[in-house]
Length: 160
Figure 1 (spheres, rainbow, N blue to C red):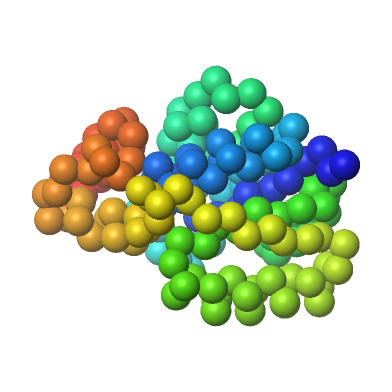
Figure 2 (cartoon, helix red, strand yellow):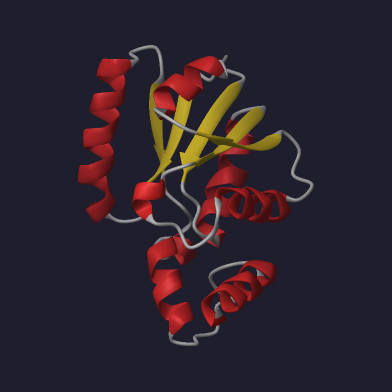
């Protein structure tokens, strides 16, 4: 049985949907590495260090979870960390085409790294980090979408 999986992403910011997938992946795998991507092309709102810190706080005392950052190809990182399984979240059908393309590319690059798709619980299935940032800019209450400390960090960041 595979003992370790990696759940990569930008996590800008971490949402309850991300946390739900982390929690459920942990029920399947004894160890889950949440890998925060350094991807300046996406113009993240939070720095890499801030995203790692927010995620560490979000997973709190959940056992078997490690939060790390990485640069480069996720399949290379997965191989270096000896993670033969990568978790990818699918919220809506619109996510599938991109994720399918990425999975086939990753499989061609590293056939020894398998991808498993997981869907968040239905109460979180429509939540995306992009949407959260948009509604935060308009002053919406974010407590239903992200932990309170993430909502506070978003408000601070958007105030400038």
